[in-house]
Amino acid sequence: MALLYYGRDFFVTLIISALFAFILDPVVELITRLRLPRPAATGIVIGIAVIAVYLLMVVAWTQFSTLSEDLPTYTSRINELLNKANDKLGQLEKETVDMVVPKALLQQQQQIEQKPQEAAKARKRRAGVPVERNPAPTVPLVQEVHIHTDPKPLVNTFYSYASGYFHILVMAGFVPFLVYFMLSWRDHISRTFLHLFQGDTRYVAGKSWLGISEATRAYVLGNFFLWILLSSLSAITFFFLAVPYWPLIGPVSAFLSLVPYVGLPLSVAPPVIAALAIPNKFKVIAGIALITAALHVVAMNFLYAKIIGRKVRLNPFVVTVALMFWGTLWGTVGLILAVPVTAALKAVCDNVESLRDYGKILGDD
Image (tube, rainbow, N blue to C red; front, top):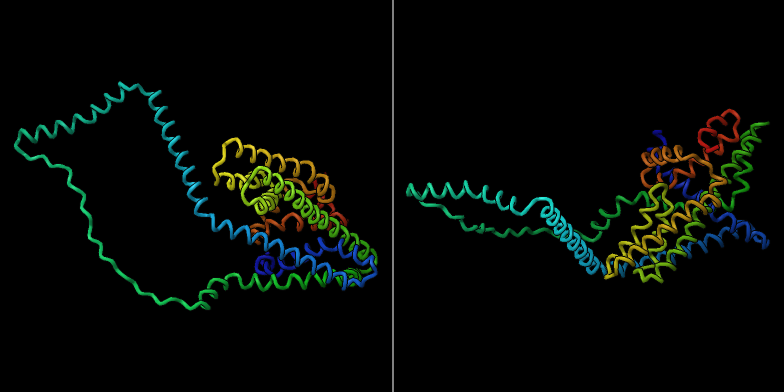
């Protein structure tokens, strides 16, 4: 536990690299059929992947830049909607009170509250005591204090901001190299790993290695292709519904849709918020929410079971505990890696005879 917690940067970097390697391995296998050496095929695939990620980042940055320019308009629009909602709630509350409590009773209550104050003023007048009026509000004299601060140098400002993410950037820099070596040296790594075992244990280790590979690849590739499909369908739908920033909202909504348990409300939130920021009718916003929810339900209840469920068979209780456990250890990244790591552990338990009972606990059979 302590090793996993204090070494989380190392383990997270290694696992993320392995996941990327599982995603790119089928493409490398396809290119090697053209009689190219595996290192060359790996370099080509990683180069194409880096270019694709760069293009996605450019598109996302363009959308974010435009969004930042329109943010004041969005903020004022959302504040206007919130004010209208508060006014309607206040009016509804007033109508409810008027309907439940009779007007005559309200007037009588106001008269009862005013009588003690009027009686006290009358007694003071009879006694010749002047009645104090409400004093006029006094405006306190505020002395402006100017604090002169020396501006920080640009280097210090950048360092203070980036120092908190320095170790993350360093570890992220290892990912492309680790992915390259995992793909180009895959056969060597698997062969030398099996040489660590002797006799029957080598066969068990080979089956466990294959089970980890199949389960992890099924989960990673399944989620990846499901995200691509949902992103495309969501972006096209949002385009026809005139949702602002549909190239950005579509992939974000699809990604949030893959979050276990809370994916439905999370996937609906981005398009609804984007639609609220412009003067739309309520029916249009409700239609956007219903279509997004329908895409999520179809994807997670039908496509997810077809693409991922056959290889990764974890029961819901174990998935929940895994999310809590790895989320506690590794934070947000742990929530993302919880299911593939647990699926890999189940693959080991299913292939090692002494651990098969634990595999049954983890499974849904």
